[in-house]
Amino acid sequence: MSEPRSILHFVTPLKNVSPFDVNMASDAGFDVIVPYGDVDLKEVAGLVQDAIFSRAPQDGRRTAVLIGGREPLLAIDMLDAAKNAMIPPHFQISVMADPSGAFTTAAGMIAVVERHLRAKGAALAGSRVAVFGGTGPVGKVAALIAAQAGAKVTLVGYDGLQRVTATCDQFGERFGVALKPADGSEEAGRLKIIADAQVILAAGRAGTQILSAAQLATAAHLMVALDVNAVPPAGLEGIDAFADGTPLAGTDGVGVGALAVGNVKFKTEHELLAAMRDAEPRRYIGVGEAFETARRHAAA
Image (cartoon, rainbow, N blue to C red; front, side, top):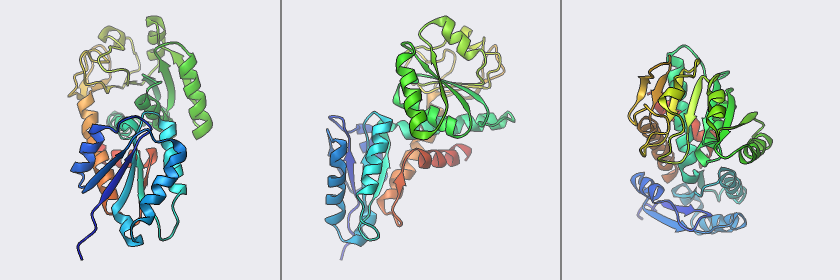
């Protein structure tokens, strides 16, 4: 009898699943990838149980669910709903959440920052981190990972304090982390934020400059500045997309560009997807698992 095919059920609350992640899943070796759009949280359990009961228990190892979307907290809720729908010990499948690639991208960002801090004899724990683009999915998750690792994190909003404060409150209540909100809508506010920052992360909208080279040069304590934007102009002026520890003029810090992060993100997502293709025991993959994997790839 032939080996059962590996099947990935790709679930998203959005209209369409991400073509990026479809390509990644195909390259990770899944035989069948099935998209499910406009999925509500309350529908997740039914979809998962359809997937687990339609195959013999031993074939659950070759059945998996990927959760997409844009909102990290909703993706985590969907991951929890999927896990709770399992019927152990026999009827179980693997599940991974990575909304808009935010979990694996943010994990790659913080893992690369940690490597460069270590090269300077410093640690992520206790470091002062400013995250620009703090209301977007990648910025939110990068702030969460850094805070869980012991960093002192300021989450910066581009449109005032209201939305970024709400994000800090949500993540603090959900995960027990202390995130400080800050208003980055005006230059004076941005300069005040970076004056004491040791790490600056730019996770704003593609093609939007957040800080100029002159502004970065005022960051007297800067050790690492990372820009995850690969679309010109750079989010942090003077940091090339290929930079991976390039000295920053006017500072003692180094710059990291989007492609250096992307290399770690790509390897992380590929490994985690491939691990679900034939998983024994089953895998449940969220933010923590993404960061653990990214750390290994960043250190390699």
